[in-house]
Each structure stands twice: as structure tokens, then as C-alpha cells.
Image (tube, rainbow, N blue to C red):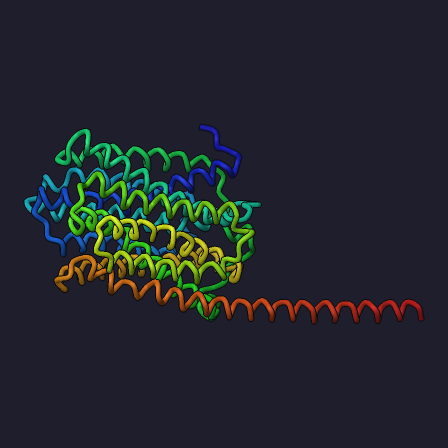
Amino acid sequence: MQRLKSYNSTFISCCLSSMIQAIGVNLTPLLFVSFQNEFSISLSKLTLLITITFTVQLLMDALSVKFIDKIGYRVAMFSAHIFIVLGLILMGVLPYLFSQPYAGLVISTIIISVGCGILEVVSSPIVEAIPDKGQGKISLLHSCYCFGYVLVVLTSVIYLYLFGRENWRYLLIFLAIVPLFNGIFFLFVPCSSLDEQKGKSHSLKELFSNKFLYLFAILIICAGASEQAMSQWISYFAEKGLGLEKTTGDLVGPLTFALLMGAGRLIYGLFGDKLSIKKTLPFAGIACILTYLIAIISPNAIISLIACAVTGLAVSVMWPSTLDIASKNIIRGGTAMFAILALGGDIGCTIGPSLVGYISDASGFGLKGGLAVAIIFPVVFFIASLILYKKDNSHNYEKLLNEYKNQSQNQSEQNTLTDLSKD
């Protein structure tokens, strides 16, 4: 097959990979009730599957700092897709082969998460390295994660309605076709690197000496925790906590959450150049705090679920805009910077939903008790975004001042040369 020449095909493949990551991360929680009914798995063990998902991704983020640049983007991308294909198939098979079905779910979750972790690290720098990529491509990439979430919710709802909840395993095998196709497709698209486009990347020592990196890390940790604490539990919350029928709960809850999150990222991707994202981030933090509070304290089940869904819009710009701002402030951050921020994001994605699950199980207040504790993440995000606004404005002022000094110096040198030429 002849290799494709247009970088549009590269961007499309990366967008598909973002949707595939959404399948790998969000499909399992949609099947939690099926796992409980068929295998009698406790809430704590279901919570552990979420913890495993993001812990493995976190580990892959850390390892990627070293190995992604060595093996290259193309090999990394293809390998990630194959891991997800294998993991989805095994999740539908292994629980029926083991005497302890939960062990089969754990093994397949680990394999899927390895693929998702690599995708998370490599997709953003591939898009960032596209020549003349234009404004907002990173946010558009991450909006595809949301729309992948929408598709996986719709697909699972329709499939389980038509074929029955007891046939969930065949859904996994069917969905494995998508990463198989895209993994092969990516082998034939053009692929540049950040070193080629922006020059030699900073060393790890240079990266860690940049104070901005730590602020971006805090922002993305809280973004991941705020997003996934709600995203991973909204389906279970609707069905068990609010007593809604699964189809209704999934359509009003996780589906709407994903649609609103995707819409927010799409708008930012298309019109982000007209927005001051540093001003938008504090408002996103406040909105997230409010939706969490309404979900927790409202006595009405539907209002609580709507608040959970609207959280998707509140968190939509948190993650991609942090990456956008980081790439602008640390221009030669390279793959390592994206891997470090992905690591931070997955720390948040691990802590957020895990904390909700364990607090809910131990406190006696159910998922509302878990969400009440998790509200700390949007609060910290709001505070960090205000600090970023102040520091970044100061940074820009210093940058403009230095540019003015350089221009003045150049003008002075030019005047001197002119005077000498006259003499």
C-alpha cells in the first residue's frame, strides 16, 4: 500500500486514536453493573479496576519519557493500538476461562491500559509536530476523546438493549475492530517529530528547572481528577445512586456529559484564538465547583444527574488548554514535556475516581459522599489557574520588556552605524 502524503490523514488518524482511547478508558465502567450481576464483584473491586486503568497509564507515561523518542512515533502508535485490540478481546474471553473471573478482568484491563497510556503520550506531540497545524488542533484532538466517549455510550446502550446485558462480551470483540483498523492506517500516514519542527528539545534537567512546568502539572492533575471522578462513576451513580433505569441513566448521564465536554473542546478548538484561555480557566473551575455542589446537595435525582452531565462542559477546556499553554510557554518541551503532563493527568485520573469509590464504599453516604470529597480538585484547579493568570501576565510583561530593550539596542546600534557611515 502506498504511503499517504497529506498531514490531514495524520490528524484524522490521531483523532481516531483519541476516540479509541475513550473506548479503552470508558467502556469498562459502563459494564460495571453487568460484572456485578454475573460475577458478584464488589464495589471496591470495581473501583480497583479504575485504579488499575489509570495506574498502568501513569506507569506508561513515566516510561514514555525515555522510550517514545527511541522507538519513534509510528512504532509507538501502532503498538498502542495492538495492545488495545488484544485487551478488548481478552476481556470478553478470560473471565470465562479463569476460576476467578475477576482475575481475567484485571489482566485484560492492564493490557488495554498499556495501549491507552501510550496513545495519551504520543497523540498530542504527533499533532503538535504537524507542519502549519494551526490554532486549536490540540483541543480538537481532545474533543474526539469526548465524541469517542459518546459513541461508546451509544453503542453499548443500543447493543445491550438489542442483544441483552448477558451478551456484553461480544460487544468488546466487535469494538476491537476499530483500533485494529486505525493501527494499520497509521502505518501509511506522514509522521513528523517535535525535534524536526521546533529544534532540539530540552533535556529533563532543563525541563524540571522551569517553574512553569510544576504549575502546569498541578493544573492537569486537578483537570484529570475533576473530569474522571465524575466521568467514571456517572453511569453507576445514575443506576444505583439515583435509581434510574440503565438506558435512561446512560443517555442523560454519561452520554450528555461526553457531548457537553466534546462541544466545549470543539468550540475552543475552532474559536480558541479569539478567547483568552487564561481568563476562561478560572471560570471553568468555578463552574465545576458549582455542578459538583448541585449534584451532591440536590434532593431531586434528575437535577443531580443533569448537574453531573453539565460538569462535562465545565471540565472541557481544562486538560487541552493546559497542554496548549504549556506548549506555548515551554516551546522546546518536546515529547518529554507531553509525557510528564500526561503523567500528571493520569495521576489525577487515578486519584479522582478512586477516591470517590473508596470514600463512597466506606463512608455510608454513597457516591454523593465520595463526590463531596472530590470537590477539592476543582477548588485547587481554580486557585492554580488564578496563579497562572498572574504569573503568565508577569511573564509576558517581562518578555515584552526584553523585546523592547532588544529593539532599542538594535536601533541604537543602527544609529551608530549610520553616523559612522556619514563620517
